[in-house]
Amino acid sequence: MTVQQHTLSNGFRVVTEHMPGLQSASLGVWVQAGGRHERIEQNGIAHFLEHMAFKGTKRRSPLEIAEALEDVGGYLNAYTSREMTAYYARILQADVGLALDVIADIILNSTFDPRELEVERGVILQEIGQALDTPDDIIFDWLQEVSYPDQPMGRTILGPAELIRGFSRTDLQGFVGEHYSPERMILSAAGAVDHDTLVREAERLFGHLERHETPSVIASTFTSGEHRQIKDLEQVHLAMAFEGPSYRNDTIYAAQVASTALGGGMSSRLFQEIREKRGLCYTVFAQTAAYSDTGQMTVYAGTSAEQVQQLAEVTIDELKRAACEMRPDEIARARAQMKAGLLMGLESPSSRAERLARMVAIWGRVPPLAETIAHIDSVTTGDVRAQAEGLATQGMSLAVYGPGDATPSLEALRERIAA
Image (cartoon, rainbow, N blue to C red):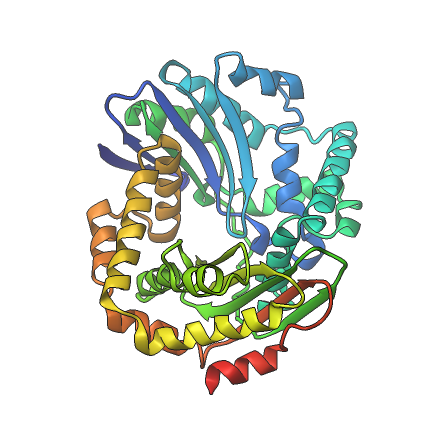
C-alpha cells in the first residue's frame, strides 16, 4: 500500500492510498472549517452548512443527490467537528469518479434553497432537542464549555436554538466565502483508487478555485470551570476534564497511553476499581482528545445519587495512585491496545481515508504507520506516571447532570487530587 500526495497550484491537496485486493473505495473532501472557526454569532453555522449541502445544487435536487450513489449501492454522508467538516462516500471501484463528482457538486454548487433551508432548520432543531435529551451526550458539551469559556473551542457544534432559528441563505454563503478556500481542502481516498486519475479529476473539479485570505483561528486556553444541572434522572452523570497536550505536542502519545491505562478498557484501573470491585457504576471510561493547540483527558461515569460522591472521590484517588503505582505491565497492555486499535481500524478504507486527511491537515504529510507505532512503543512507565502526576497541577473542569447535588464541588475534588 502506497501513500501518494499532490498539491494543485491553488493549494488544494490530494492524498491517496491504494489498497490492493479491494473492489471498493472510500473518498471525501475534508475542509479545515469547523465549529472553532465560527464567530460567536455564527455558532452552529458550520454544521447547518453541512446539512444544507444535501438539500440541492445547481445540477441535482435533494432526491437526485440521495439517489446518485445509492443507485449504485454506495453511501454518502458528512460530519462537522470542531476543526473540520467532512463530506465523504463509500463506493465500488467503478463509481469513484461519480462519487467525487457528487461531493464536488454539493460543496461547490449548493443553492441553499430558502424552502429547503426552512425544512432543514427544523431537522437541526430536532437534533438539538435530541442531544438535550441524551445525558451522556450533552454533558460533554457542558464540559467543553466550562473548559474553554467564552472561546470558539468551548461552543457546541450544533449551536444554540436561537441562532439556528435566525440563519439565512446569506449567512451560509458568507461562511463558505470566508472559509472554503482551496488551500483548506483535502481530497482523501483509500482502497481501489488510482492517484493520477484522482489528481486529474481534482484539477477539473477544484482547480478553478482561487485562494483567498481566511480569518485567523482564535487560540484556545483551557480554564477550570464547573457546570451543574439538577434534573430528575435515573442516574447522575459525571464528567471531568484535565488539561492535556495538543496533537502537535511530543507528549501526546504518553497522554493517550495514560488515558488508556486509566480507563480505556475492562482491564483499566478505573473500570476494575470502580465497577468490578466496588460496583459503583455500569459505565466508566477515560479518553484523550487532542486539537491543534490544546487537548484534554476526560473521565466519565454514571451512577446513582447515593453513590456519586464515593464514585467521584474514588476516581480522584485512582488518578493519584497512577502517578506512583502505574506498573510496566499496565503500560505494555495500554500500548498494545492502542496499536491494535490503530491497525485493526486501518483495515477499513474509510478509516484509512480519514487518517490520511487528518495527518495531512496536522503535519502536511502522512507519517508511516511504523513511525506512529514507534512513538507509541517509546512511551515508558515514567512518561505515564508523569502524565498522571501532572493532573494535580493542570487545569480541571467538572460537569454534573442528574438528581440531587451530592457530587463534591470542583474545588473539593481539586483539593483531593492535590493533597
